[in-house]
Image (cartoon, rainbow over all chains, first blue to last red; front, top):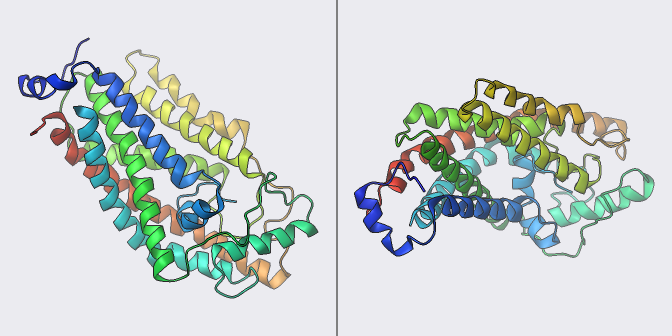
Length: 64
Length: 256
C-alpha cells in the first residue's frame, strides 16, 4: 500500500504499529470524532442533554 | 502511530477552540438563551425546568410532539452560574475535539490522496470555511438555530435531516475539491440535495403557546440568535481550521 508521506523517520517510528495501515488508522480517528460528536450533540439521556444544552443550541444541533 | 498523534493533537485543537468558542458564546449566544428561558415558567429556569414548561405546552398542542420523547423535569441539570458554564465549556471542548478528529483525519487523507505533505494557513482558512459550510450553514438553512421554547418537528426526524445535510454538504465539497475526474464539479449537486428533500418543520406557529407580546419578543430573540450563532460558529471554524493546519506537520513527522 503506497504511503506518499512516509519518511524514513516515521517509518522507523511506526515499526511497532506497522500491522495497522494508515487508512485504517485515519478511519478509526474519524469514527472516534463521530462518537464524540454523537455524545455531545445527539444523545438524549436527560442528564447529558442538560449538561450540553447551551452548546447544542449554539452549534445548531437539533435539541429537544 | 499516526492515530495516536491525531488523537493527541485533536485534544489540543479541541481544547483551544472550545475555550475560544465558550468565550464568544458567553458574550452573545448564552445571554439570548437565558432571555428566552425567562418565558418558560420559572424565572432563570435551568434546562430541566424548561422541559417541564414544554411538557405543559404539549397538552395544549397535540402537534407539539417531541417525537415521543420528553425529558424528565426531575433529571439532573447543572445549576445556573459557574456549574452550567463549566459544563458548557466541557461540552464545547468535547464537540470541538470531535470536529478536530474529523478534520485532522480528513486533512491527512487529502494529503495522501494528492501526494502532498504541506498545508499552509490559507488551506486552514479553506478547511475552516468548508467545515462552517458543512456543519453550520447547510443544516441551519433548513433548520435555523433555535432558541429554547420554539416549536419544532419531532426530534428524531430533525436529527436525521441534520445528519443528511452535513454528510451531503461535506461529501459534495470533498468530491469537488479532491475529485480527479473533470466531472468532479458535479459533486456540488450534493449541496442542493438536502434542501430539495426539505427539512422537517412543525405545523404550528413557532411560539404558539405564548401570549402575542411574548411571542413577538421571542421571535425577535430567535432572529438575533441566528446572527449570534453564525458568528460563534464562524469563530469556532476559523480557529479550528487554522490550528489544525498548524498541527499537520507535527502529526506527519513524529518526534516520539
